[in-house]
Structures are given as C-alpha cells and as structure tokens.
Length: 158
Image 1: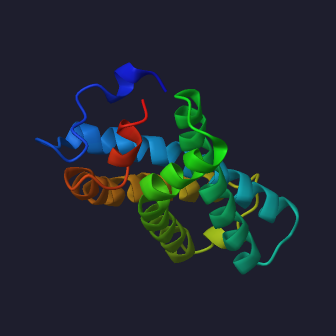
Image 2: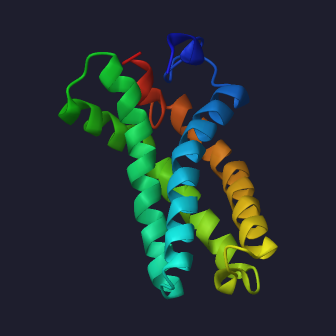
C-alpha cells in the first residue's frame, strides 16, 4: 500500500471518518473475499460437506487477510514476525466479524450451500454475503480506529 492510501488517518487521535472506516473495511474485505471465494470454490468443486467448505473458507479468509496486511508492513521494513503481530492486531476482529456475517448470510440463503459453481445462486449468494458483511463491519472498524485499535495499528508502519 502506498502512504497516500493512509493519509489523514488519525490512528485514534482526532476524528475518525466513515471514509477511513470504509477504506479499512475494504482492505479487510479484499483479503476475506479472496479467501472466501477460493474456499467456497475449492470446497464446492471437491464435494466437501458444507461444514468443511465453510471452515476452509474461513481459514483462507484469515490467511489472505493477514497476508495482505503483512505485505504492506513488510515493505515498510518490519520483519516477518513483527509484520505478523501487526496483522493480528490490525485485522483479527475485522476478519472475524466479516466472516461471521458473511457465512451466516450464505447459510441463511435457501439452497446457497448446495449450489454448484455453475449456478447463479452460488455467485449471487457469495456476492450478497460479502456486501452485507462490508456494511456491518464498517461501523465496527470505525469504532476500533477511533480508539487506536484494529486497522489504526497499521498506520504507524506506513
């Protein structure tokens, strides 16, 4: 990430805007979506049971979410271990909330967990669940950033 992406972020000092929270959530959503989609595709294509597909999706969402944050802070000069600690502090709550909402929505949509990759329901449910997760996670991130938590932790490393 470039320094410009984080210009104006207060890291808990000053006003935390909805734009800042949305940007942090979008960053989180990118990693979550990569992992979530990949997990759903692999689980569905491999014929995993629904629970196995969800677990795989959640694990991959955390891996990709942390990896995206680590990539940015490693570029700032942090070691791999230090970057991992920053990613844990910055993204764990956001990813957990996003995954809880995302997977709850998918499970709640009739037939979504049984839809195949070629079904419009598979892709529509996945996109809808990610959109709902974004909307619900943004206020969580705003609250966390305003207290110097979550994504605000990353800001000192850019």
